[in-house]
Image 1 (spheres, rainbow, N blue to C red):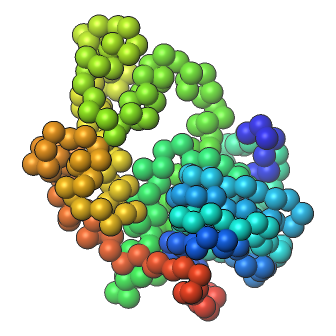
Image 2 (cartoon, rainbow, N blue to C red):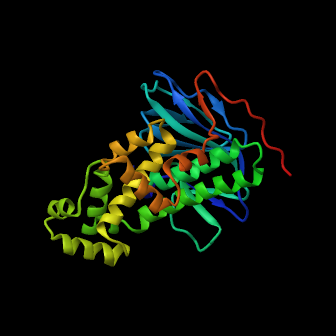
Length: 299
């Protein structure tokens, strides 16, 4: 399905949406989403790994890694096929704060408070989204945190999804430019031990010219960009796996753990352990543990 032919939900955010519930789900082999109708709440279903098969009304959706499905209220949805072992996803429910409309027109009409979320969308920058989701999950499961914080966190997630969707529509040419290909190649190979010379050789340019490209387009050096991509990957691994800091440094091909720690703190101002512990109150659930959470009461 072309991105321009997808059903799009438009939310007015004059004030933040109301958070309901959220978590991270680990599915056993053969798991299927239960047969349910949301009572006024929307659900974001964002895949981390594996596959999920969700039917909304008469429409069937096959979801893979980094796919985001928006499930509207008042319509039956369920799993139409069993998932493989290792399927994992984030789930988030919220109530809209303003008018919601649907269309196949993806052009914003000048309303600064309007955001657009497609029914199905493949997330472009998952590392950026992961940080927001973990902030939401940590806040939602912290009994000392105000409920207002969770409302703003999930609203920020919706804004980020809308931004990534609109960018993917408005800048299709940018994604195919040579410099964008270079950046995407670095992201794809971020787990390898990369050097400026290696990237330059891959694209048949000189290291000096490569660094000039990064200075002109990103206002940074090539090696700084490479390290930034690796640290984004490290943040995702810290928040979505139980791997040790040493294992993550090894996975991302840092020369040693000490150098990884130095680069991580240089770019984030905190240590990897402090970063992981900052978002430690995540609600995890699986097929044996499913939340029964009452709907929030309006203030």
